Amino acid sequence: MTIQQLFTDHPASVNESYFEHMEMSGSFAFWLFIAGFCATVHAVFPFLFEKTGSRIITRLHGRMVTSRVTKPALASLAHQALDSAAL
Image (cartoon, rainbow, N blue to C red):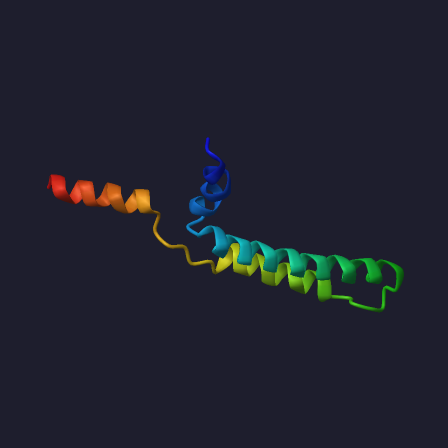
């Protein structure tokens, strides 16, 4: 495995470029940090941030799993092209 593959294989597996993946992951990290902070404050002061952490997690789940639109993988497109050519 090359150094470049270490940085590009996983982003490619979710149909993102390195920088697209960096932006998405960085955004998730930011909101997870905020959710963790709110949960920590809520642990000490239960009347604060009663639903903030769970709301953030629900929104992140929606972005990552529920409503994520992925681009078709290049390998899949190449395979479809070969199948079409064989017909």
